[in-house]
Amino acid sequence: MASADQASFARALASALHGAAPGSRVSLIGSLGAGTADEYSDIDLPWVVPDGAMPRCAEWLGEVLGAVAEVASVRSVPEFQRSGLRRLVFVRFRGVPVLEKWLAAGPQSVRERLAPYLRKITERGLLAIDDAKQAALHFNLLTVTTVFQRTFYGSMPMPPGEADESVSGVRAFLRLYGADS
Image (cartoon, rainbow, N blue to C red; front, top):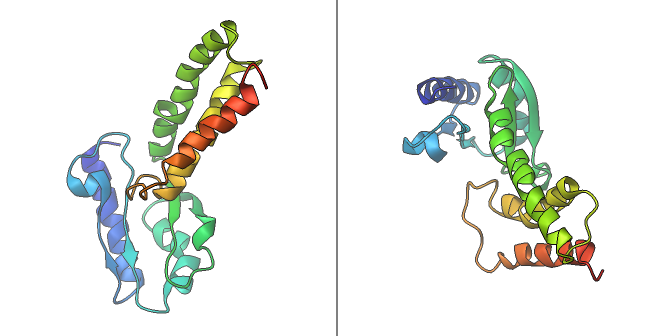
């Protein structure tokens, strides 16, 4: 989807959200909001609803957005599901392939590019790996997942001092795949 189409789609989503909850506010942030969007950009729309309305609004979010485009999936981050104040929700729309493009360019690509290096390190006797692609997946899960969760998938800066969790992920990977393990 071209960035002009993304911006138009984002405006339609924002309008639907605003109209669904009187007194609410919707803003466009992220790369679209900053005017730096590319074909991999997603749509980031913080939606601030009146006090006490969050549970009700979260309940019918898919229906509201479905009036704009067919919703393929709605996923709420578990840490906020019981909160009466906030939700972090990811919505995928049918026919809007941003997620698929991002996965192919990001996580899947990283695994494909990391696997040959892990094979070479294994050949040198430094790691004990039977399946380099699986090991690359484990490396990503142990090092990147925490960063994604702590930064709400890049929407906030990493809290100070928490980068050590990625280092501990590397240590865990080496305990799992180290030649001396």
